[in-house]
Amino acid sequence: MNFSLLNSLTHENIVQNQEQLNQLKNQVQDCLNEALKQGATAAEAGFGLSNGLSVSARLGDVENIEYDCDQGLSVTVYIGKRKGSASSTDLSAHSMKETVKAACSIAKFSNEDDFSGLPDKELLATDCPDLELYHPWQLEAKAAIALAIECEEAARSYHPEIVNSEGATVNSHQGIHVLGNTSGFLQGYQTSRHSLSCSVIGQRQEQMQRNYWYSVARDAQKLETATAIGKKAAERTLSRLDSRSLSTRIAPVMYSAEMAGSLLGALMGAISGGSLYRKASFLLDRLETGICPDFIRIHERPHLKGALGSSFFDSEGVATQTHDIVNHGILKSYLLSSYSARKLGMQSTGNAGGVRNLTLDSGKDDFFALLKRLDTGLLVTELMGQGVNRLTGDYSRGAAGFWVENGQIQYPVEEITIAGNLKEMLQNIVAVGNDVDYRGNTHTGSILIEKMSIAGK
Image: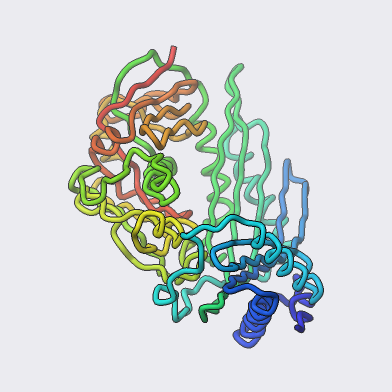
């Protein structure tokens, strides 16, 4: 095997064209052939390479400049129904063979599992069109430093009550992912991801608060400007000053778009294959039953061009698909990998590795119209802790945000806990705003819930 190409990739010459991508596919194929040579009955190999630049500045000075170049190979082999996996960051020919050998050795000592194995061949992706995920940014360290300083300065100069800074950070990364298996699947694609963020501290009398803002995109041209990000970070920080707690009560709760994704994440965890075959989900055996109001539609859009979650295949090589998860409030699909699907007697949904571009359809109300519908209640803009019980649906998390009366924000609140049960919370969704946050893998507007428990003083 000749792995010299992999070892020659650096920050300056990361994969640039289809010819080089094909060379990398050949290296993965060589690794699969080696696995069969060493006695595997089936195998999967994945190759990942990424590099980039990260620059941070604080109080007008450079705090950190970091170039990184990461590479890695993962190999999974099957000897009958026995499975073994190994990985390496050393991509020399000798190391590749030793990694395969280690995986085979582990498989020989593993217990048989009737549900293990490669994905069903007919479900594998057969094509990988360009989803416009690769937009390299020729960003030099000097220019990145200037951007970070500009962003932080816009925040620090916004208002006298901005008294300190946690800094601004610019990140630019690009990479390649290739996956193949002995069923004939072999695909790969290039990606890029760029971001700019800022976090500052405000003080009013004795109280201090911090907040942040960020922008992220595959194409740097789609990032918010450094000045806009800095000003938004400052505005958000100032809005948190004079925070107070609340007395314990039951009231409507509105999750801002930035926080609403966490609700969908809790739902996705409850319908994931691992939770279901372990019988550790409050949504076990709930397919084709109503779990939300009939205006709710939640669906996956993995083929959106340029989106952060897009891919034509999942982490096993199964073709991803646009499909409804909840439609008219009815649970239409679980999220299954090949293994969990076999455990449940079902078919993979192409969700090994999670959902891609999860989307909750918006209603007609913008953020301010949704505040009017909230009338008197809590707007949540920050969540703390991981208090979600997938088995029972019980939900309890620390929160901060704003108290709202007559549809108008009155004052910031902190040191409170919001609680409920996800079964009831999902059923009690009143509306979804059209203020969609696209800065991640989950696309949703603000979510208004009819009532929840709020614990404070």
